[in-house]
Image 1 (cartoon, one colour):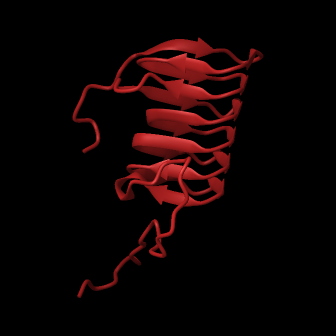
Image 2 (tube, helix red, strand yellow; image 1 turned 180 degrees about the vertical axis):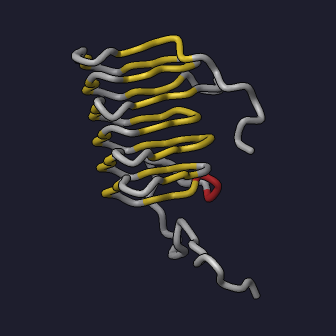
Length: 142
């Protein structure tokens, strides 16, 4: 459904025990197992994937196409394709997404904004409608 384009290869790795300070720019794919203190930003207009493992921590803005998180992110996130929050994901910041998949156990301390409404991490939302609409299992559609 979301893989209309082939997923890019993960070509870069920030290994466990590695700490980086400053802005980290990448294209294609990046996996973070260590710690980044600064923004992690995919090249604009490029099909990208970012994996933040359960051992990783990012303190700063995160922007990429497909983002998979199972670690800690302290800062805003913008995912232009799909944001996957694995069970150990912990987000402290606002989240802007095109599509969101959130597993049980993942937590978000911040606001959720669907990208389709034109909201970016640097804009305020004045829309009173909920970002997610949940339908109970077994309920009838009118």
